[in-house]
Image (cartoon, rainbow, N blue to C red; front, top):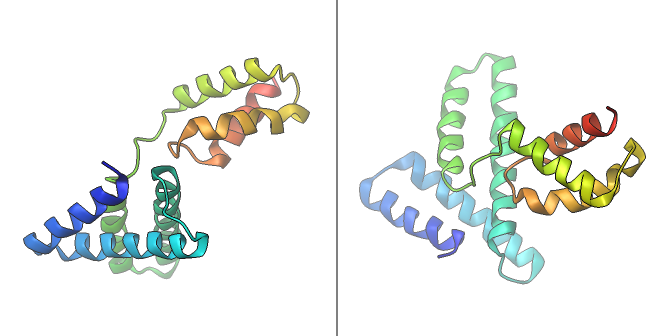
Length: 148
């Protein structure tokens, strides 16, 4: 079963149960997926859908940061609820140890020895993360391992 089908089924359940937050967030996610499909001219696979959901998650995290600066507790609570719904459809994030192990494996496979080899390592590593860690987190780990 695809991630898009899971979202559509969850939307039906939210409509039946009257869960307004869940209904709103899933509709927004499906709309963002549809927009991306129209832009690309094809259906998205699960990896691309995860990417769309991560962008939506990041937007909400940025909204929380702005709301904290403005002292808007109502926006913070609302966006935290939306983030909780989005996380249900994303794969579990990698722990720091798991990310370091994957990075070390990619470094060994590419034969990288210095930070100048970082591009080769990242090219191999990023597809393996499958949306379970951000590119910046992976970059930080690889940089740390290559400067030892």
